[in-house]
Length: 167
Image (cartoon, rainbow, N blue to C red; front, side):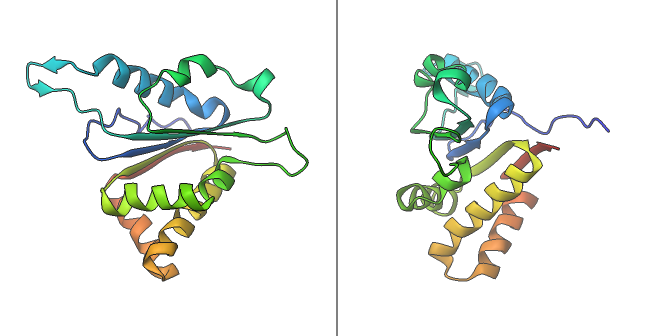
């Protein structure tokens, strides 16, 4: 079953967290290219809204699979985190990078303190693992797993946690 995409370029002053390993980078590439093009632009209805953005991207190897590397470095990002899953003995994925203390703290600040949104694009297993990593980050602040789960659900219900996943 093919469903229409739910992804829309976030036009907000709140932070956006974009998570797209492999081919999941495609919609974020478009969103970030549009954001870069709109920086400093005034539209008839007002100035372009370009909020802070954090991108998590994953691929197997930097020399073979990191497409758009140079382009990514020019995108309007506050942080770019790249997981190269096959460059070390123990595989590292985007959700592993999200769980690092400093990254987890930045997620909490973006989502709770600044009302940010999460956009996830990729495989269903990755999407599930990413959601658990977000809940883990929120748990560090909320100190209650049920409250972290409710927060993510409220984000989802309010259109602030958007997933485009496939198997």
